[in-house]
Image 1 (cartoon, helix red, strand yellow):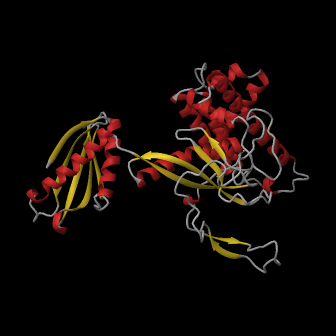
Image 2 (cartoon, rainbow, N blue to C red):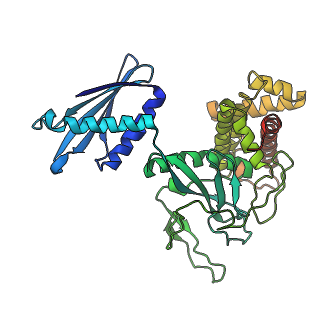
Image 3 (tube, rainbow, N blue to C red):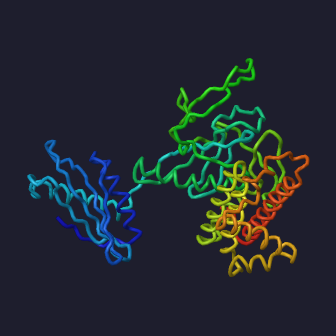
Length: 417
């Protein structure tokens, strides 16, 4: 059986989203055994689906989706692997299934679902809940607002709450996962902390010191599994109202002013809303460049303790990703030439850009992770202080450039929603 249609590259992805949703809605089995064949730029993707027919009868079908060199979905071919079952038995069921999917594609039927995604970080507790602009708008808040110990070395849990327009429950979860990963990178840049998803933590058993400040210290370390587990439900079913679960968080200074931190508490910059709105208003090209920058900066934050050389390289890469798409500059080199004095340009070219290149392409570790000096006595180790000075200077320069770019974006593109 062959069903012919011509869906554009954009419609193709929508078709597959509704196809999977229809499989779930009709309680069909999940696809398996995917294979692909490439010929002259065209792709044929085949999957196996045990298909439920009437009267509890089943047939195993091979579905082959043909995609042309332009990315258009041209047709689908369906054949039975069960040779004893004639096509007449399942043809009408499959035809109705495909037409139901196509009807949904062109009607664009969607519903709104609430989703909460959890992230972790190491640091002081978040000051409160923040309602921030986006597509969709979202709530960023501590999972446990009662945490106010002021300790900076604790693992904290924060949540991203939002309402998603989606095809079904599963589709809503997939969209929310994608959006919160991007938002986590953006807020990691603003906060200077690595926000990571507990769902990405592998099942590992780590050595820990089961220490309770109210009890005597244990005699020895023990090995426990990493992860989150709660005895009572913590997930609301609808988007909380402002102030319902948590007090509003206060803000620190402007993002591009000299960093100011309140001891014992983590706060977002005062102009976070303006920056997020302006990034979107600046257009899809700049928004994509900023997200690439934030993701690379996020990787830098995740590596700064164990591999500071990796952190330096990714800070430079983040800067390049953003500067290349900034209005008024042809490329990163032109941006540097027009934005800095001679001494600063020399530092950026010789230390930042050249250092990143040597690390990624020649295995250089300028922070000395594999050198004797990196574990020597810092009081008498001159190179130790030189590396610390280098790390701080590169961090200051790269962040300062990112701040200046965002300042200009806000000046040119901010308008209240």
